[in-house]
Image 1: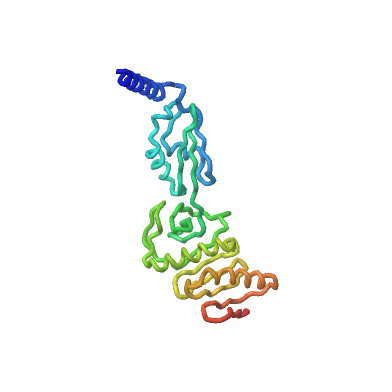
Image 2: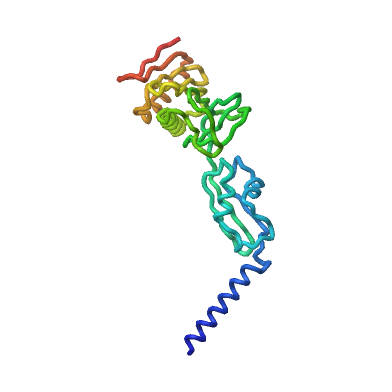
Length: 237
């Protein structure tokens, strides 16, 4: 009998607690914090989330909120955290555009996974390399660019990631990926680098970086041939 009474009392207390948490104005949202955002404003993140002030924090559907925020192509990852009694924290990780792809008078901003995060006619201040030679008819923001030749995209992504890892993105003006057997770089100083295919790209790019640093220090212009077996060959202009 005592066990039954205790069980009923526990259920009543649980019901009362849940009802209090779900209905008390004490837990109505008063602060929404957004962290990790650089390209998407806090106001835009809050707008996309669908959250509103004075909404009870325990009535929030976190999965639905995250789905809403993912409408921004720049948002790669998101976490929703409640802070008692009336705070919502939205932590996001943004996608970082690494290359610019020409498209009908504008440019697609593309990240390291080949995801299109933005289209813009202005690239002022972007300081990113332009990648030419990709063949595609259409695209959708927040999705991988639909290149006709998937091997071409794979080669381009491998090259982009290695350039980022090596830290020479800001030195590269153009990447030409039209021929996946002969990927090409053009630096802002005018030096051309013929890489060949994407085999051993993780060693070719660091080597190319060292060569470019040496050539720039000597103010030399020309073409670096790296698509063959053996040591790279520099052909001055």
